[in-house]
Amino acid sequence: MIVVTGAAGFIGSNLIKGLNAQGHDNILAVDELTDGHKFQNLAAVNYMDYEDCDDFLAKITEKSAFPEKIEAIFHQGACSVTTEWNGRYMMRNNYDYSKKLLHYCLELRIPFIYASSAAVYGASKVFDDQADRQLPINVYGYSKWQLDCYVRRLLSQAHSTVVGLRYFNVYGPHEQHKGSMASVAFHFMNQLNAGDEVKLFKGIDGYGDGEQLRDFIFVDDIVKVNLWFWNQARARNNLKGFFNVGTGQARSFNDVAKTLIRLKGRGQINYIPFPDHLKGAYQSYTQADISSLRKVDYTEAFTSLEDGLARYYQQEQ
Image (cartoon, rainbow, N blue to C red):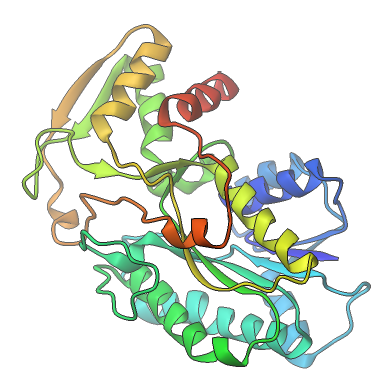
């Protein structure tokens, strides 16, 4: 049995889709459906059973028996709202919950592959996944960084795969439920469909209008990396540590907007003032250093921005 937490979410549901494509449906989908709209993501994939995240944690804590042996836990569940400032909630949800899953996996030697985030780097211009110090600029990034720090202290004791994947700016299908936290590609497509206009922020932090730079990565590439690490674990190559998952190529918001306008065949860009509430808590530049990923022999090429946006656009039409 394979466990995917955050199964009804953006990356979790795409991960189940990827597992299905490899012939796996003995999957326990773990999530919480307070927002019932997320059922659409679960309805699009195949899995053995569904369990609420609190019930799953209770079984883990009590070491209750599961119907099948757990082969791996892909821990994608978290509060990913970067504008959430309730630190108590964030730490309980993202940090405490994850620690309990980690210890369960360490004890039973179950591969534990979890979602970290490029948010741990904050406003840094250096994205070194082996560095032991980072300065996140929001409490979401802090919760992910503290989990990474906790994991780092236990890696030398681990006899199984323990991998934290620092996702950069992910876009693709199944993110419709994320609201303001959905990718800029999602928002730009909706804006074009509503009025043939894309709204981009005016310049800030020394960047020109719409020239803030991000490492945009298509969700299918995120899935490939997760499954590759699991396949390494199945081959008894128990990798451990933290790995950036991005294309390694920063692109501007203008690039995203212009590509989508070209795909639609019409539209224009409107630059709007940068919101006050995001000042000082916004990453104007991200670019993954993927050398650690390459050093462990992950050789797959990453989808270009133009190809990824074209695939996403075609699926959404």
